[in-house]
Image (cartoon, rainbow over all chains, first blue to last red; front, top):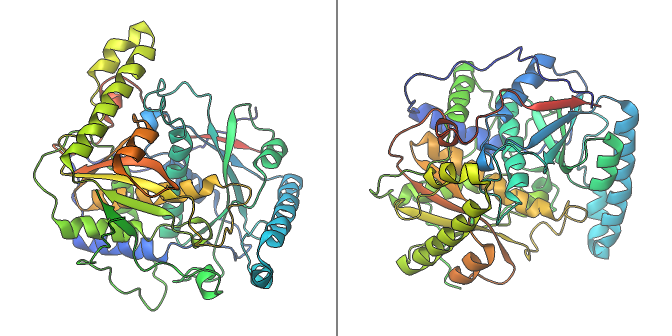
Length: 227
Length: 227
């Protein structure tokens, strides 16, 4: 395994000695961040500085994880051949998914742009190491899926940190996990969770593209029931 | 199904007309939030104002979701009988998990406090509606688990919004999904993802309890490989 551990060029500030409290201005800005986050599919092709990528990974590493297991594994995909293999898999999966839509929705499906595999300058696959001993199994006995969920928490942390820096992230899920896993030759026991396209968005959007494209509006409010 | 939709007493501000950019001070505060987030297990028992709970749910609802499907379903558990049933399930699952540890770790396991089921004033179960038509299946054909991952993204959003308000969240996973699902009598097709204990933490902690208790340190850096 060709390991390349991050060099932490942009380290986090050391934790404060006393617990922070957050001002109203921060809470309002956090709302703005959550409101404008977006799944980005249209990227400029100019590069993202490496220290910024490393800074995002350092922040992802702050995510919560079951039993402190930190099972996230990041694969920075630089090989054009590997990216092409994954893009070809996307094309095949997407064609099948389009054909599986009801006839009246197929044209709308075909018009969607749902990935930036060839434009975004940073392509990253994220895996869950189901074999890690870190955490000593705590919290995973009845719900082993919490390992994968921990990886999702790290992805979301990276996503928000990226948006705070003006960077866009797009999560591609129209892929065959076995094809991606094989193409990237990752260690045995690593389970594919997500493919992330990361780069500068062509345009910052306040509304999801799936909504403006007429595919799916958002529900105004979450479903909350009482028991 | 006894539906109780949120009344949005604390609505979000309307989105800004133009894309925001985030100042360095916000980025630094976001780092502080990520650094001090914590999984909380020790709660004060004084109540959380209802508008604050509703505000957290409104923010969770801003999370990304596969195909804009927003499959998160929140169950606010108020019935002491139901909470007791879940706490009993936790006790049984936790005893089994402790027994499954190697002999030399069982005492350390027994000393851990890993939930606030009886102290935290807000108990909330979070489910994934695997039957929702919202999103028209987009993005889920090859990786249906992305529905559950979307729910995890909403949970993390709620978690960060809570910490920004000084509230603690603890995710309990040492539970039998089938027992929780049955105890709460949720609609068919709802899959149990997480149990959240929410309240004011006894103490804000800069370091995970699992680390200070000697159970599991954090790795200094994430594993990043190149391909």
